[in-house]
Image (cartoon, rainbow, N blue to C red; front, side, top):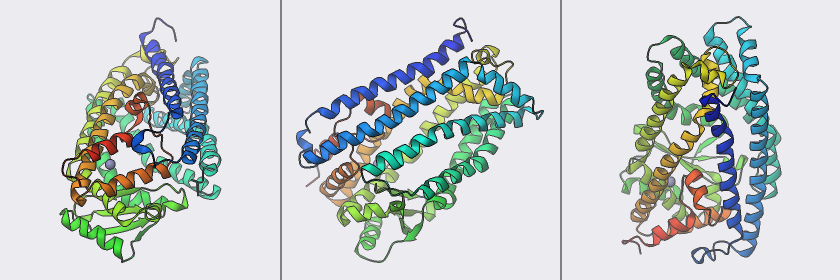
Length: 416
Ligand SMILES: [Zn+2]
């Protein structure tokens, strides 16, 4: 661990530099909360709502900032006091092979991170979200969700980590094999998530017959988008925030709507929101995003393969030799700045897709109005920042700010 080691400098920039960049972006974003509501949003946020959202956003940021400072503090103290070297030596001392030792190290680090964050998650859920009337989660659900997530990580994450460590331990082209493996695994998860994983957390029930169900099937027929099933999901058991999503692809497509969305929106708005979701599908946004994330994964694995061969890389963290599992954990710190850059690209693409899906929805229902109204209501109900700073939008927003979406929708030529 010395300043003459370029890997050490890279890790410093990764960990401390990116933290400061995030902090700076947050400050800029918060400073914009005091601004007057822009003309196009007058009537969306009342003065009372505006005051409430300013408090809500500040309170949420306080939690995430305290969590990030704590995680950073623990990491830096652990790193600079030789914790990684000690952890590796102790894990190797258990006398298992390099693959088991590697997976063990990864599991311990992930577990430590999760448990340091847990009190902050609880503070956010039962402190902030509850104070603003969003939270519906009980402590029992919160705890059972946590253990279900840990169990899932153990059942799915540990074998995946094991295979990747094994590739890097034994193969001549480990980055390539790991990349192919992750590509196949991602496709498998897209299929598995709605069938096996989401039902562990949410209850899916078929939507009752009625006007809304008819309207949804009518829209699907009109857009030539075959739907097998429309379900309602009990999101209200955890939060009042609404959502809609699609699950599955090919012949078994099913639409799932949060019950919270059904409660707060009109049928026209829900149909327009669904038309937006169908738009993502029709415009082939999913494969484009998948290709983009796999390209990024390829870049990351390639660089990782290079780092894992360098004893200097491990020395930057006070670790002897070139243990693969520990390398996977440590590489994340080196990769952070590049991750921010590739993230900018992915998010810009995603925001472009949102505009396209909005335009698709307006054409599909013959007017931009229902979507406009639906988006306004969603923003108000979620207490979203009315005019986020561009730096925060670039770094974190997968959806364009409301003002921009409304402007784009209203300028559509065919809209009435
Ligand atoms: Zn969208």
